[in-house]
Image (cartoon, rainbow, N blue to C red):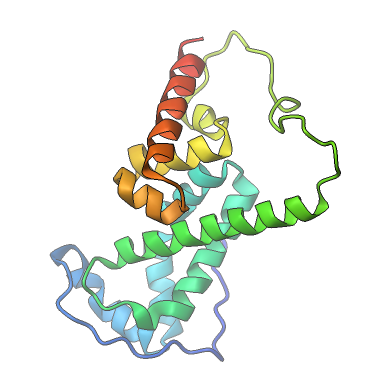
Length: 198
């Protein structure tokens, strides 16, 4: 991603009260404090330092490069707006990760609501049937295999196996039962094994 987000300068975030930050974040605490005080250049530095990881997370969760870029930009806009809530109890990158996950899941919820309102009656065919491609002789790389997972299974797999969330955290973030998280993870792993060995 080459584009730098344009942040609303007329909506300066409230000044954050910084507590002792994790040692991994000490070098950035000055930038975070300056950005929280409304310094756009400091926030742009934080953006450049974190944009690759945020975009990769959005891509893994959304499975679409264009949508992932939009979601990454939205995550940084949301971070700018909510920077005053960052208290320094964890690394800035950890806080930004949570903001990003919430943006992606919020987009998913609004898409589901929107599709439920416009879905024609009798449209009961599985959505992924038409999009399935016949198996090819070429092996599928892991990123493509992950992006081909069904939506729920992909999100649980990324949060649990890639980002290291526990099932209880996945359950809370996605608004699903712990058992559902475990079932989706099992499904995702099974589908990935099948995709990567065929």
